[in-house]
Amino acid sequence: MKRAIFPGSFDPFTIGHYSIVQRGLTIFDEIVVGIGNNQAKKTLFSAEKRLEIIREAFIDEARVKVQIYNSLTIDFAREAKAGFILRGLRTVADFEYERTIGDTNRILSGVETVILFTEAAYAHISSTVARELISYGKDISAFLPPNVKI
Image (cartoon, rainbow, N blue to C red; front, side, top):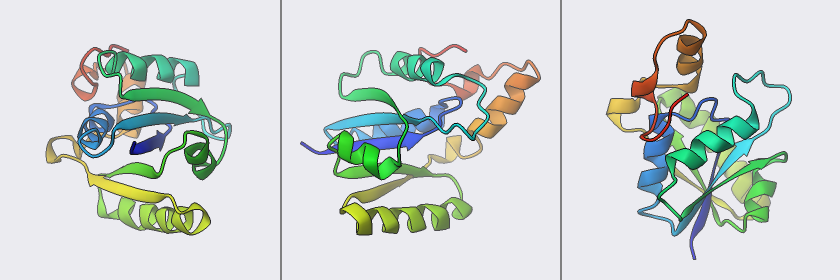
C-alpha cells in the first residue's frame, strides 16, 4: 500500500488543500492529513476544529484519514507508516523551502517528498488570506472545499 502524509497547519483548510489531496489520491492508496500542532504559531481555529473541518471535507472518502501531531513531520510520517510526504506548491518561493525540507527528510529517513503544483484556479488562495478575510467578517465559502462551512 502506498501511503502518504499531507502535513500542514491548515488554518483553515482551503479548496487548494482539498484539491491537492484529491489529486494525490490518484497516486496514493491512502493519505493521512496531518495537522501540525505548533505551539509557537497563533492560529484562528483550534487543532480539534481543524480536524473536524477536514474530516467533514472528506466525509465520503475512506482513503483519507486526519490526525493531529505534535512532532517533527518526519517522525509523524514514520508513525503513520507513510513512505511519502505530499506537498503542494503555489509559488516559486515555496519551491526552495520545500526542496530543502524534502532533501533533509529523505536523507534522515528515506521518505520521499512528492510535490503537486496547485491548480491555477486556486493559486491565489492561501490560509493567510482566508484568515484575514475571516477577521474582517468576509464570506470565504468560495475558498473552502465542498461540505465545509466555517
